[in-house]
Length: 324
Image (cartoon, rainbow, N blue to C red; front, side):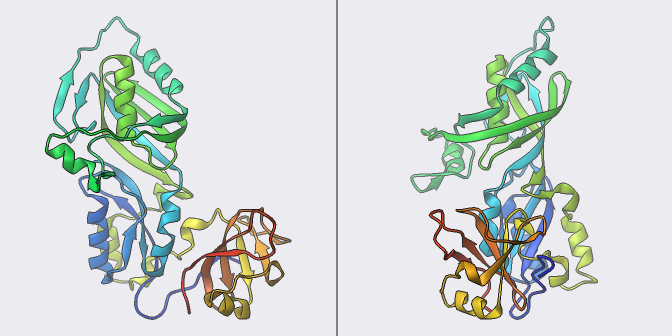
């Protein structure tokens, strides 16, 4: 294969990836429900929750592409963040009730203090999820407990803040771009930063500008999507099912091998050729323990396999994306 195109889906319904620019005030589930109605299909799922306050990149998987949604959830994210110092809320963002206010001392160099704190809070660290979160404790989402006035212990999680850049400060506001690992609560990062400065803080604006290899420049608004569907078919507005996986190596196999794989027979290294993410071919095999997309000339992208870490010649089938 000369490229990584999966081709257009056929059969029961549309299949592929939609990059939505989520509007503020909408939940991720609201977006999924809207896409279901617009595309007239039930098999739709998002790739990771974006708070109602937030806007920006929300990849939505449709049809067979829902089988790759979990991989997109694992991707690093980047956000454009605006915070306000001196005001704390119960939700850690501007949608909540104010719980404390602190006047900012004009004698302090807030610009330097904020930049120093942002620099200090990069790297790998532990973060405790907020009470207003979708994380479940004892089988119930935390936000439901919080709405009843309950506070429960939440296990801290390891996160990594890769970088904080493009900092702009106009006290009491500070704006910056933050790159981080999955599962990072940006509003908790902001609230903790305010606490370390001794004045509290909350999130006022949040835009997800990057999700893995996907940038906000590729996102479409729901209004524009609806307009496009007046002229185009549901399948035509979707990216191919491997659109979120362009950073993975690609294995190309014959149709004979593809049929065997669909039946559960793992491919031997002699049955594929490797095309790495830059398009180069002819290399003997990807690195050990690599997750790879698998293509055939007839099916396009149809499976995910993992190269054995122990050097075994057969790749382990991780998921069959489509059977035909």
